[in-house]
Image (cartoon, rainbow, N blue to C red; front, side, top):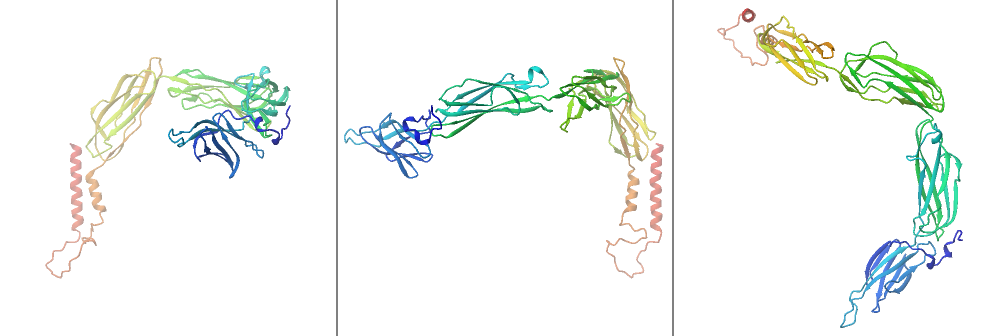
Length: 520
């Protein structure tokens, strides 16, 4: 039995070498191969098949010797234990048959380091996956089996095995085991230990660890670690059940109930339970969507929330989860949610979109109104629309109504032409629609109200003329026009007031033209 073997207590013959070479190469006369602090050199060759190998470290020759194929040169590092071995695999002399001299001889070598022990640690538990629940009798004890194998290339001495149960209470086995030695490829007898699962208020992942510490022949310590991650369920969990049909029709109300179950070891006081609606539904009564409840372990409160809602929009959607929160003894707020599932609201969904082109015209000109009727739902519906024209326009041509069975997901358009009468902003009345489907669901819809701008170009021109800074109603010229000095009494002069009279005459003519167009 070997205990705490000192570094000087072993010889080169006691060394276990690594199974694989650390370095290899082919050396000619004087060639070298470096490995860590060592330099391996082919010093010389002879015709008997020997190659002289030297091992140098820090510019000091540590070992030198002639070596033949299959032989080796070993250096035992008594100071640090960095032992090294050089093995000659082949020697090629290339002897000239005429002269008997060697020509470019070479030696193929491999360099090995001293081997070390290395432990492979495998941890298995009685559950796979390793999930434990302290609330369940058969799931509150962890049974762990530890298997250790020396996968290194050398024997381990004085090995200790230490178990870290991550805070769990030990119920069987020990937390520390010791072994005198573990040879290469040795497999230890499995270690079986049992622990009681710790309690947490949140689902928690913990690492069950096993560490080995052993010494090699040079008394150096080698540490290896293995771990197994365990998932521990919380001591209290609120299970929230929200009842809602998977399919709903547009004209039907839905009765929703919410129940809460305390799946836990401890009571829960003053838990707040809150529900919400999404944009697909509206609340039909004045029911409260929030309440407070206390629950003993294993207790269920049924119909804790109950209310009626009605669809306002078709399509697939996922109603929000019901949420329950409470403050645990550790002062932290815990939150639980109900399982959400997709709900389909069936029925037609009629959408009207009204546009006008062009959006700006002159008095007496025409514009085209287009109405898009779209069924965004998933059921067919019979749709009838009606139009209302403002008094400031007249109907020219086209369709003023729509009567059609519109399939779900489809759309249709119709249009008509109107003529404007006078200048101004015209807000077109909304298109109204009524619909009914095969289930008897019916309703009304209205469109948006686009605006048509009617602009009088003559009035615009007059306004522009009046606002032009280059026009001086006093008969003078603007400052940007060069003046001409003249004292000739025969120069023509504009009689004061003539420009104003001319402006009145022009406006009168323009008004007469507009009235004539209106009569036509």
